Length: 132
Image (cartoon, rainbow, N blue to C red; front, top):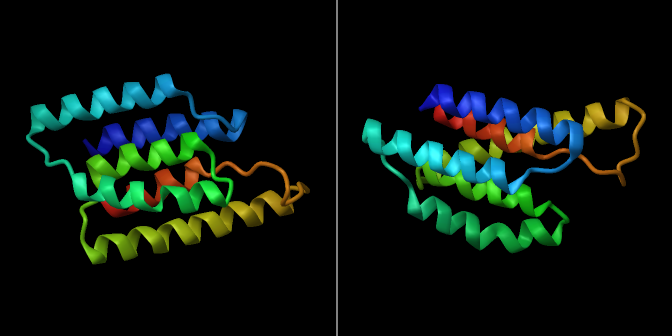
């Protein structure tokens, strides 16, 4: 399951950095793939994590996070983030660190902070960090 997460995250990171879009087809493919792997391996899913993600989604959307990023967070939190305080703090720490790095690289690259910044790499990286 971890290898599937890394491969899926790598693909979405590449697509988001290149196009600043996360296609619904990719998310559905990930949903069906992770659900099938979860059934085959007997891995648990985390509906409480999905609920927590759904509760913070309006905050993310208010700060202009893309809908694809929010759906990606829903998908990955359901399969890979247990709903414990330790996991939440670990996820938020990794998300903050990777986001800061992405913003730094974005500005060093000569782009304005008002332009679109790919957030999928931060979400995927934080989930990988928590899933290892």
